[in-house]
Amino acid sequence: MASPSRIYTAALVVIGDEILSGRTHDKNIAQVASWLQVQGIRLKEVRVVADDTAAIVEAVNTLRARNDYLFTTGGIGPTHDDITVDAIAEALGVAVIVHPEARTILEGYYETRGGLTEARLRMARTPDGASLIPNRYTGAPGIRCGNVFIMAGVPSITAGMLDALSGKLDGGAPLLSETVGCWVGESEVADLLRETEKTHETCQIGSYPFWAEGKTGANFVIRSVNAKDLASCTRALVQGLNALGKPPVAGGI
Amino acid sequence: MASPSRIYTAALVVIGDEILSGRTHDKNIAQVASWLQVQGIRLKEVRVVADDTAAIVEAVNTLRARNDYLFTTGGIGPTHDDITVDAIAEALGVAVIVHPEARTILEGYYETRGGLTEARLRMARTPDGASLIPNRYTGAPGIRCGNVFIMAGVPSITAGMLDALSGKLDGGAPLLSETVGCWVGESEVADLLRETEKTHETCQIGSYPFWAEGKTGANFVIRSVNAKDLASCTRALVQGLNALGKPPVAGGI
Image (cartoon, rainbow over the protein chains, first blue to last red):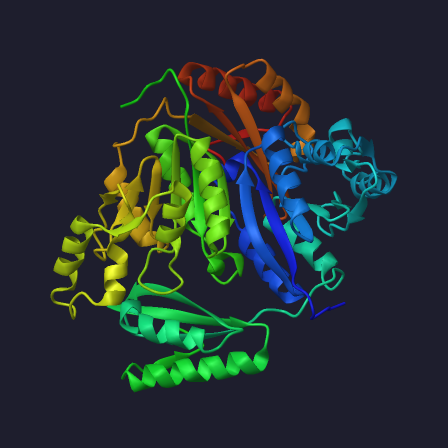
């Protein structure tokens, strides 16, 4: 479904006090970002917000309006602190219903696990008009409402939901990248980087320094939607580093 | 400098295409979040934005206005893709200057490292009116402008800058927490969690499920600024879990 002629964008809202408290290290930003790259969709912005209705509504409404897709993670479980569905229904201006298909899925999942209690039935609640995103691990589905995709907070469950969506969303040409590493202080090659980027119009070069083995190094990531330009820009950078007597390491360090 | 009578809040803006591309896994959210907890400051929101002036300006201006403190990470190195200082000066409506003290620090640092080149001098640029945050690792300082704190993207350098700020910002009573783990599906104890929270007004209970060793478990995190309420709420939850025949694990699983 690729439409190379235009750029598709997405935003992600990570919902959870546990991330903002520092107790849990988020893993969903990186996995959603990597997955979107493969779909040809650019992740433009991420917001991490508290388990707070007003904060969720603001983030969802701002970001769904200015992106092709909006993803959320977190807050769709069975407990009192799971308020994502209600907050997003409020953001969309629709009611919350018990989704018949979700109810059937949960009835099946809990048949041998003690039955569908009131708490578990909470996980069948969706904004009105939603469709479901399969969850192969724990039954409770993700939810799609227009361009809003509501996913789990537990990273392994989110991974399954992303997998179910793979190849199903319209995307553009994927942003390609090459990485070149070098044992050099980035300040020593700042001019080279700027000039190389400037002479390759469709390319951006990012410079990411590090300190390891008692030495200074950096990885340079060249990005473009054009494979030919990417190769040409990478070649120019490699030649430039060699000319400065700083041998590049293909693929990065 | 604690003022227990009011709540101090902060926001964090993570600046970097490398996070949004999924290439680099952010580590600054968790470390800034944990550090703020100790300072008695609540992290209310995080935004991850691209290396894009308009995106940085929007995030910085929205979040500095509604929080006591705003922190940024990323984009303060010597290369062309380091645009944070210029973007924040634009957000604040001030000029960018070469900060004399920063220049002196960098001259000292690079004295034995090839001297202060034009690229390296970029790291002495600050918004007008700024003060510096020491960087014990690589010379190039962090920057404070009013309630905006501009820090490095490399997590180890950011850690040093946070260390330099420790105890120097006004904060309120720290949010205390206790964790209770249990080998139970959270849906089985949803009522207990809701009721326990409801009867302990100053406390919030977060429920974080996981799947391990082929079993379902959850950690319940009780938070309060009041140590006595926290202890009482934790005790009530432990008693409730025991009464359901689900032995709690103090400190979490």
